[in-house]
Length: 70
Image (cartoon, rainbow, N blue to C red; front, side):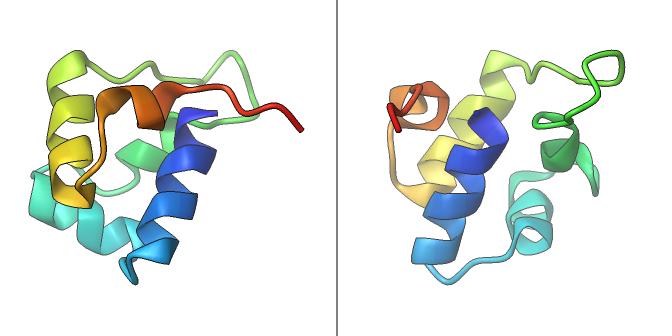
């Protein structure tokens, strides 16, 4: 959910996940792990990382973590 939201918002803003990670100072591939389909390897991001990503994308942390209803 978090990963999908970040991907959608980043795409809307014309930014790649790799570029976002670089700007945020997050190690490469970290954001991908936030959305891992494999629950055993899924990583929950720290609040400071979410705040940094939200600021870069100019959205709220709530928008990154909100569950969308299909």
